[in-house]
Image 1: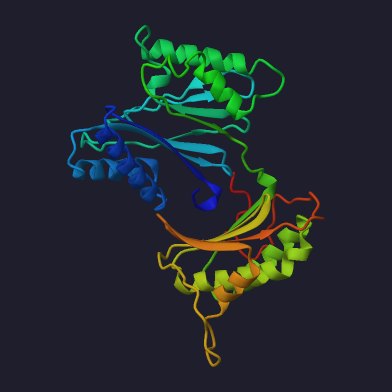
Image 2 (image 1 turned 60 degrees about the vertical axis):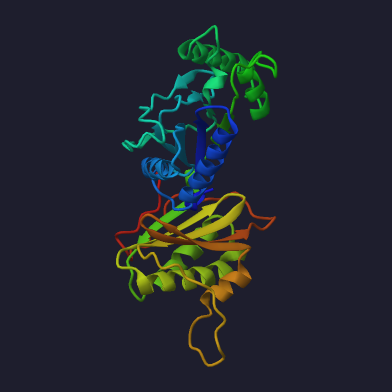
Length: 343
């Protein structure tokens, strides 16, 4: 999981089958997970992974494909280090090989990678795999990929898309425990996306009156979503987090509300200074904002990103909430406000 409801999808393959290869894979896996937490673009992730792989001092190389899925924008950002291209299975049963330029494998030391953006349609399924799935003694990789696409098309011949477990079984085909020439890793991801009408987004100037404006926008949005019962607590938390962002921001801050299975609020600014909760003394005039957020929110956190940081909190939806929604709000007080992030 990444900030902003995004998800990192990673697959890799180390050369060799020895205990040393397994150890190298464990180290690379840990490095990737650490780098993912920095919220860097996929090409930078692979660049830093390549640097760290060189420092391991091993002659082993690896391939890796790193993808970043944004369910709000319905987009996929992908970078490839010598790995096989992923296969996209569309809801209508057609398949597509995503031709992401492979780049050099990890550990070679060239480090020239590029991120490529492509659509991630709702209902489509992405398959990431290693060469053991498509390459064998009697067929090359291209033939194996064609066979994989045929198996996927056959799996979607029914009226309803198969569950991911069933789809993975179909992708494996006749490859059983005794019929494999190589080990196989397979990752299947179905894109659900987040509906545009369940997202509200603003750019707000970092000025003293911004917290009040953020409360007003939040209240109107929650009313449109039928979440008036959450308005008081959400306004209070939004006000505290936005006011803290205004203190340190030098550029417009972002405020985003998402209504999924929870109500999520995200406030971003260009300062990398992550706020920490502290217990204020009786005579202190401030320092209680995050304490209130910690008490009122179901979950909250602060994450550094490449552009600064994002502070977020979540609240459970009331059982009786209805499905009313808004797609556009603008009270005219800030011409830089923008509601629909998909646009």
